[in-house]
Length: 82
Image (tube, rainbow, N blue to C red; front, side):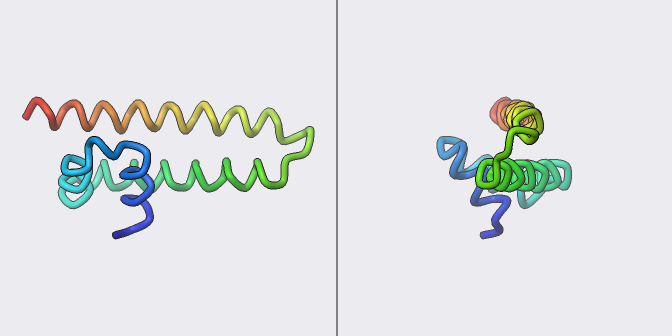
């Protein structure tokens, strides 16, 4: 599996089948998965090399990751109704 898919499956294991279906069939979801992975990777790097000036940036990436998680959940809840 691709890293984007692994990352989302780790975060939302209860939606495994839906995530795989969306990832393989929906380009928007695939792009969202990539954005989420990039955000999580950047946040991880910021935490490893945290300096005082990066605290604001770290908080911004935390908020972005949460926004992306909410968008992912919207996709997952939509597919649940289909």
